Amino acid sequence: MRLLPHSLFGRSLLLIALLILLGQLGSALLVRRLIVEPRLELIATGAVRNATALRASLSSLPPVQREAFVAQFNRQVLGGRNVADDIAPPAPLLPLERDFARRLAARLAGDGLELRWLRKAGGGPVLRLRLEGEALWLALPGILPERLFTGTWLLASLGAGLLALAGALVIQRRLNRPLARVVQAAECLGRGGEPEPLAEDGPEETASLSRSFNRLRDSLARNERERALMLAGLSHDLRTPLAKLSLGVEILAGRDEPEVAASLRRSIAEMDALVGQFLDFARDSREEPAVVGELDVLAREVAAAYADHGQPLQLELGAPLPVRMHPAALRRALTNLLENAWRHGRPPVRLRSGMDSDSAWLEVIDSGAGLGGVSGDELKQAFRRGENARGGAPGAGLGLAIAERIAREHGGSLELSEQPGPGLRARINLPLRNG
Image 1 (cartoon, rainbow, N blue to C red):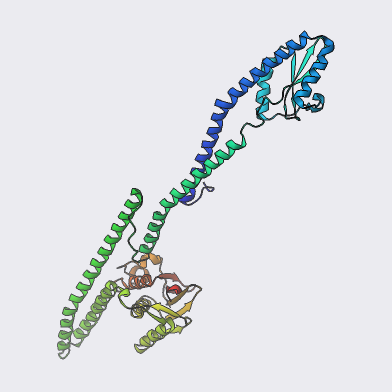
Image 2 (cartoon, rainbow, N blue to C red; image 1 turned 135 degrees about the vertical axis):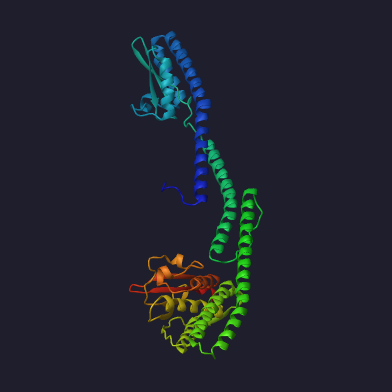
């Protein structure tokens, strides 16, 4: 199985080539059975009749004339050459010669005739007759085709095989193009993009596949819009009672219950943060105009904002080249990663930027417990709470999902991996081709 091509195109082409080869071999077998073997049978029968007639003629001649007759006969057949000079020593015959010699020898058995073969002067059988103790050689060349398959037959077979292979190649490529488009669209959909609708033309099978994919694409887009609309509407509606609660807390603050007011403020702040995450998750970063900017500048601004709130970051910059991005969305993604690091990890927290050969990146590194035995793909799932994996701090479980979505909407990705030491590395990769 390792020798088989990995692609459907390669396997189909190999199968077609094998079928063509088997067809040609079958045609050759039919030609041999229906044409060549009956022809050999007919030639062998004629050769035996000629040999019998020659032997009868030689028997009727006086002994002194036989040798002269045979010499004259052989000279006419061989063009003046001597039979004794052209008779080959015993050697393996070609398949056609061996088959013909076997048929001829079976018919000459018991007639006192010995069969040999000429290798020169065109080739062919030579009969040795013994008459009254005298050995006479009679050449019978030119009665057997030199080759089983002529050049014309081989060229016709090769041409037919190549035409069939070329036709199969064209058909297979026409089938493979729609499949390749479906694969590309599925990969784009898997990365969180919105592929263009597939053309629903061509054969019915591929057209049906394209229609099914387009329906799936439209259904997923519709579900995504409905979910975003629901989250946005719910979050917006919650902001009003939160504002009323905040007003009530401020009224209570002037009374003799400061502890109750402080607890309410903390609860309202947590609820407001959760509502903000819902809104961020429902928001599409591509609605914001894309600009060309530097990741170093963005990282420096975010670090300054955290320093103002008493959360200093270790800043390591290394991405000076401009990148095409949605700055507000990318800031939200970076903020979610930093909040995740402060909430679930331990200080110090590092914010780094850098560039590779084909991408630029921003990464947040904390000094906490790392993944805690949970895979990065699981942590990036929406509404996945991190308490089991990373310390049990409260949250909606949307921070990493928001960061991953924003990275995918930029054509990049979010990678989660553990540090060589303690801690988790969360890296946003952005392709430079968008720059």
